[in-house]
Each structure stands twice: as C-alpha cells, then as structure tokens.
Image (cartoon, rainbow, N blue to C red; front, side):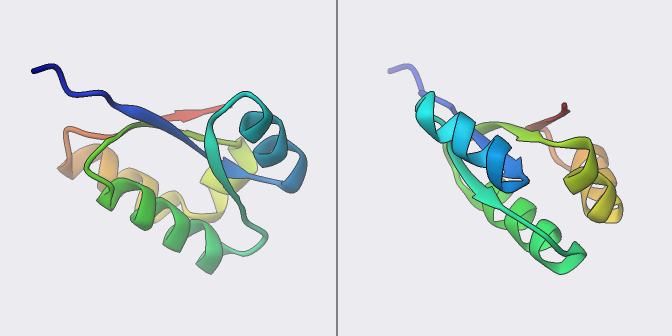
Length: 80
C-alpha cells in the first residue's frame, strides 16, 4: 500500500493561514524557540513529507533546519 505524505507549513500568521486555506496544516511562529519546536514536531510526524517554512522562520531555527537536513531523509524542508 502506498504511503501518503503530507505538507506542513511553518511561518508568520498570514503564510500559515494561507496554507491552511489550501488544506495544508501549519503553525504560526514568532520566536526562535517556537520555530525550532514547530519544526521538530513536524519532523516527528510519520506522515510529514515536506515542511514549507518562510525564510524568516527558517532563519530563526537555522541550527534545527540544518540538523534535520543533514541527519534525516525526511521531511524535505523547503524555504519560501
């Protein structure tokens, strides 16, 4: 059986809301701690295939972004 992977969005309020309107779960973040925590939670989901992060949110959690990119096959992290 084919596994269905999902998208997840992490960013500012407008971006997260816009992606939710398109059917993509997401989380609004404002601090480095919130961004890192949201990314770790998204990466821990078994069905999360792609995390879409705003450039600002990814910058807040750069160490966590790099860690996940280097140590895990999934999820793919895309900065917008």
